[in-house]
Length: 213
Image (cartoon, rainbow, N blue to C red; front, top):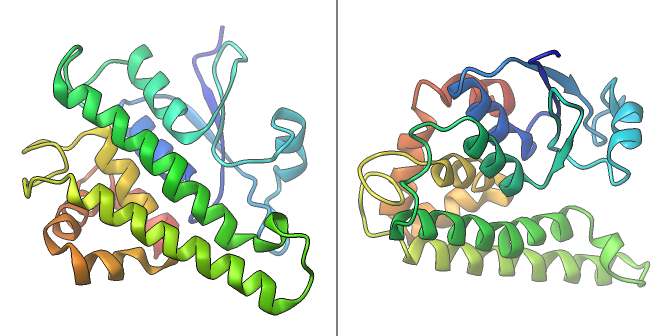
């Protein structure tokens, strides 16, 4: 059986955090560009649709052919199957907080990003003003979500303490969308500083260079 994973990815997508973690864990992975928003679309976009009907990024296919979707689920599953230092110890408050805040960010912030990116999917109105109102409401919800996440940060070097965890990778990527880093710098500078520390980690910086340069 092959040991190689297949990750459908795209520049500036949620797959960036999965790329970081897979590199940090030393996993063998083939990256397949499948972004639907580029012109032309990624060369593996049509193939992605056969694997994941919603054509979402990231989509990860395991060596055994199992399909994994949803960023938090992908990250958490990888760390359960390939244990490392990126998750707090089991049955600790830190581990519970890690999962809690990643899931909160996924359901509140990531969802709002999708609405802001594609407001036409979330209203039956076809005029520009109505769609702009949906987008603006989603961006406001995004900012509120970040205020809540940043409010849970104690001021430590990273979100949960002095060592980076998988939640830091997830937050550092997600906070780049819709100018939320600027929002965080203005309102939560200590949290923003923590995200910048994540950006400079050797496991992270090369992937961010490829996605965000």
